[in-house]
Amino acid sequence: MELILFIFVFVMATFLGFELIQKVPSQLHTPLMSGSNAISGITMVGAIVAIRSTGGELGMWLGFVALILATINVVGGYIVTDRMLAMFKKKGK
Amino acid sequence: MEFLINLSYIVASVLFILGIKMLGSADTARKGNLISAIGMLLAVVVTLLESELDYPWIVAGLLIGGAAGTVWAKRVQMTGMPELVALLNGFGGFASLLVGWAEYARDKDFAASAYPTFTAFAVIFAILVGGVTFTGSLVAYLKLSGKMSGSAMTFTGQKAINAVILVVLIMVSAVFIVTQSDWALYMIIALALALGILGVIPIGGGDMPVVISFLNSFSGIAASAAGFVIFNNVLIVAGCLVGASGIILTVIMCKAMNRTLVNVLFGSFGGSGKSAAVVGEMKAISTQDAFFILEAAQSVVFIPGYGMAVAQAQHAVKELGSLLENNGAEVRYAIHPVAGRMPGHMNVLLAESDVPYEQLCEMDDINAIIENVDVAIIIGANDVVNPAAAEDEGSPIYGMPIINAYKARTVFALKRGKGAGFSGLENSLFFRDNTRMIYGDAKETITGLVAQFKG
Image: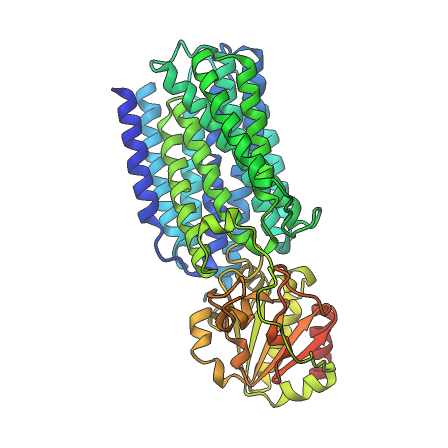
């Protein structure tokens, strides 16, 4: 039953994703992409959970590397997106 | 505790949804990015409440990753943006692969899962999509940063090799689901990585906007698959949102080129020689003569392309634009949706050099008034202004919407040399009677024109 709930969540989120973005002005294409790219670094949550005492040595190392990479993705992605949007903003006035 | 964590994940998911929605509109975009970052922070912080975690390693990972990401993102030049986005995207994909692998390393026969077969399937999917995202993004990074030739690399039997890999992959996956053996997993990893390389190598530089946004969508799907591996709802939701919205952006890019996604990814694109021969000759003009024409112009349109990014000419272009304005001309910048190497590439560069927002025009808006434009200045753009797309049915780019620069009264084309564009197509625009070529580095040419105006 739990599995069905997760699949339900998955399907709903897919539809929501399609509906969320309809007509995006072209100057926002890059920020939208790099901003959503940062969100895909959510896998760092999975990496943290993998770094646990019961995970075994290999699992720990894999989780550790995953955490570093995903954190770079998240932090770098948000900062770069903000930098870009700041440039758009100052001339938007 | 479990309840609190899952409740916070729901809040984080809502923040992601709001964030993506707000990113889609100019007024709210920056706030949207911030809201989604807060959602991410919340998701990470509550995850730290999970039991049995090994904190020293986690803190070390967060610090290393956070520092590297910050330094990278702050240092990068705006012209280096496409390759940075590609690289970050690849990292995210690889992380999802590792999360899937780590779960297998922790629990070899997925005995802890209530659905061992499903978990095995999810592990394969996370590794496959994550691996393709990783090496695919890496190849895109190498192509975009010029460390590897940006042109399409094709060889005979390419499709056959890909097909063989796919078949082997399906067989090995089946073995893994049944036996959960190490060698099957390692083979899946290797094949996924190979598939990413082979998939992106044959795609040429001009198709990069499509590829980048497609890989972006893929990294979301990989995260979602990793979410199914560890049964974590925030991974599933956030990954899915990125996957779906990335597909929408990809479709927008494909439409701008009048091609299907399948055609971009698998159609070997290139001059087959069927297109009409171009007659006439290219007529060069000096910057002095170009200056006299510009000085008299009432309306000027800049049409930038990838060449402007390569020459880093955006600041010089903006300076020339301001001078033309002071001279009484109406100045606009026309941006084709797939100009450059990532979606919205030209907008980022022109924003960096402070081009006023009102002067940026989308393709349809400029095409409506292009007949009344005195001078269209094409800076390192090629295929997006190639009239063959409108006129030559034999051309591979026939049907692609273009900026109708050839309808302007005078066209200046700034170009490094006489060669064809990335697609290997001759551009008949350069041979037309109203076109004048200004050869040389775009930045030097523009700076030269600026000097004429000042002097």
